[in-house]
Every structure is written in structure tokens, then in C-alpha cells.
Length: 159
Image 1 (cartoon, helix red, strand yellow):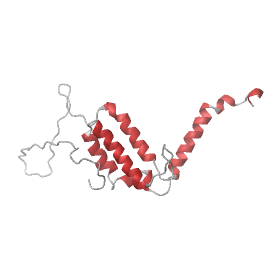
Image 2: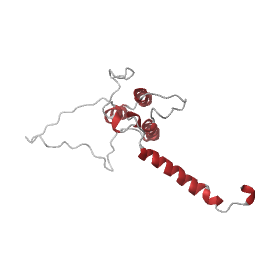
Image 3: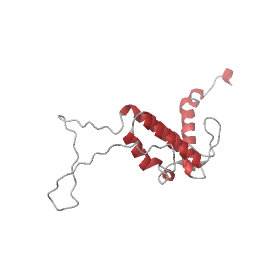
Image 4: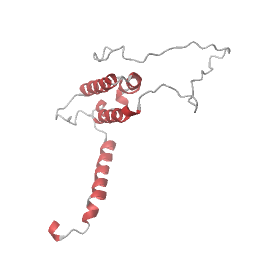
């Protein structure tokens, strides 16, 4: 990859192509993939269940990063730095856990430079008011339902 030098191009799934003899001349005929039945299990797992939550948390973190919002270390990063950091973090997690299929999917559909602007907040100069409004509404709902109802008529010593 010329854009991100840390990506190893050999870290990709090994796709085994099998030749299928199709007797029909119809080019639109679909080849049926194996289906799991009670007596036959498919041994392929795209991403083991134990990695799902961490990957979702990383995607959520990467979605919410923005140049106007400081990172945990109180540093501000440019959109390109955020994109590179997000790609590196996800790539290293997938590589360290040998998640070749997950990385391939995440790169092609989410983290590639052509797909990144479709979902990442950092790709735009402004912060979406819809997401910000949702955060504020959620915050006030939490305060209202968890705290304020307890203090509807507070005692004098609490004031």
C-alpha cells in the first residue's frame, strides 16, 4: 500500500479458487455455496465472536474522532493524522489477532481512503449537529431519569 507504509500487502486471506464445471451456457447462473445443516458444519469463521466487541469499539472510537475534539492525550490531530491513526490501530489489532478476513473487509468497505469520508466525522470540517444534538439529548435524559427524579422535592438540608 503506497498510502500507508505499515500495511503488509501479504496480510490478506488466502482465497482458494475452485474450478466449477457448469454444463449450462447461461453466464448468469449462480454457484451455490455450502450451507450449514444440522449434520454438516461450515468450518469458516469470518471473525471469531470474541473479537466482535473490540472491533465495534474501535470503529465507534474512529467514527467519533474529529480535528476539533482533542484526543485522550489532549492533542489535536489533522483529518489525515486521524485517518492514518485509525487505519493503523485497526490494522494492528487485526494483524496481532490474525484476523485476515476481518481486516480485508474493514479495509475495502470502511477504512480505504475512498470509503473513509462516507462515515468518519473527521473527514468533514464541521461537526454534525445531528450527532451533537443526540449526545446532548442522551445526556439530559440520563440526568433526568437517574438523578433529578430523586430530588423532586429536596429536603432543606440538601439545598
